[in-house]
Length: 145
Image 1 (tube, helix red, strand yellow):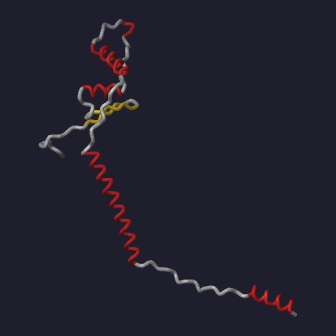
Image 2 (tube, one colour):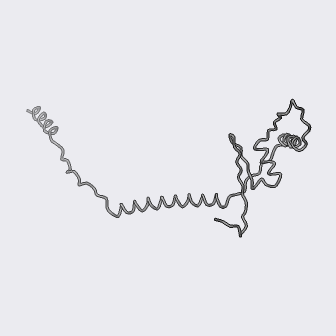
């Protein structure tokens, strides 16, 4: 009988259903929490917009000086020979009428630096285009629209 009692106790312990808690009522968000989250998002977006605007104003209206280009000795010698060919053109035989002199962006910016314009003028070459950036200080009585 002892064996039957053990089997019966095992069956009853396995068949007992554990008590489950009643499902909790759905949580509602408090109005205070919603207002605080909304306020945090709005202030975060306003902060990002203010920082972006300040960066744009500083970069547009108060730019830093450009870095002048300086050539190495070999580049300078090559550029000087190109300038000499431009300044002292010789008579061109008819069979060599289509001569080309190539001046690259670096040489042109170095020339501008030699002319004391390196911190305020910068030239860039693109595919079929030339662009220039100029920084100048406008006088106080300069008309601004």
